[in-house]
Image (cartoon, rainbow, N blue to C red; front, top):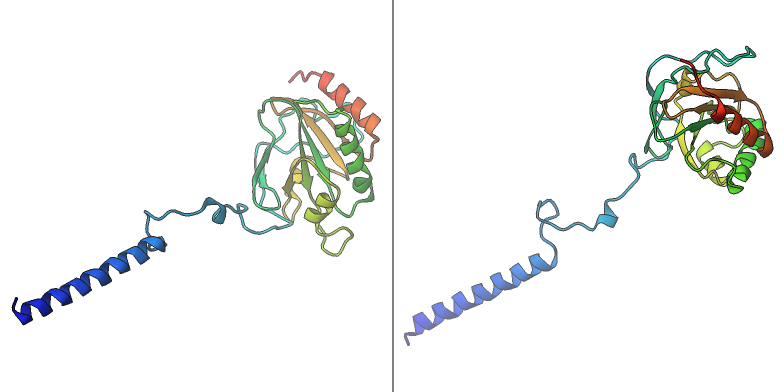
Length: 225
């Protein structure tokens, strides 16, 4: 064989080997991360919707505010459609209250600094542990009236420390969800039927036993409008 040809064959062989090794390295490394054909570990991409825990979140609403709760009997809000309020949990997960649903809903407005709220949360949890809350009833907490200079701030940690077992909506800085819902004091509780109409409202501290009776009476009532 001509020495020049032999040299050319050797050079080509070396180039082929180098290119082959480079290809193997690319495959082993998963290729370009920006490539649409790359495989991404789902555990590396799952995160909270916002990626941040925030104590206030934006609030939107459709419908009419219910009247502010007062001592009027009967309650003028009874049978009214509660506004459909859209918001988010502390981590940005969407939360909606009001509107049609699969069953009744109890909305619990809470302020982290309120001593009555601090007493009420354990009573609600005790009632739940005793199966005193109907299985088809959705319970939603609304953290409102946030004050970063008041006790038990931040409310996200406060509710976690209290072992709050239900979903929570974080109200905005203007307490819009509280105002839209007709709140006047804390804690403020509202029960809606499956159509989103108000069955009962109350404000103040209750024992687990009183809560059970209040819930039963509310669910036994029937709006006429």
